[in-house]
Length: 149
Image 1 (tube, rainbow, N blue to C red):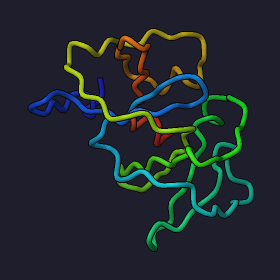
Image 2: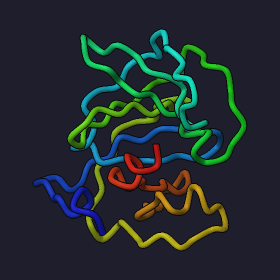
Image 3: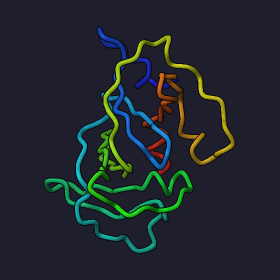
Image 4: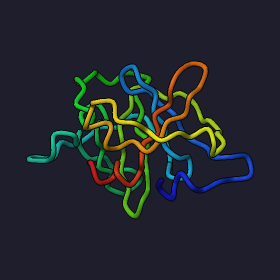
């Protein structure tokens, strides 16, 4: 389990949750710098297919990666609900998500190991799952996510 999952606060672990296609994912709140609307993106020639482009984030270059492309899903047009989750792990990285869900708090015992479900691109980035009454929340490993872009 990654260090991000092992950090326990007084009220449990917190995750920012969001939708990509019809699945809900989460990343540790402690890894999220901010959540922004999709700005104008500059395309980068010969960049990996998952890179949608780069953006200016208050003077810093922000590479913006599509989670849909990483997960080998079809592209969807950006709309008013589309957001970029900006993570900071030594370097800024933005990840496009279809829409935000919420911030959840969970106890350590609620996080279960993830068992591969046959979607290699997605499964390689997962570190756990939380079962909730409305369905599963798939927890992404921020370190692996940074490496996948």
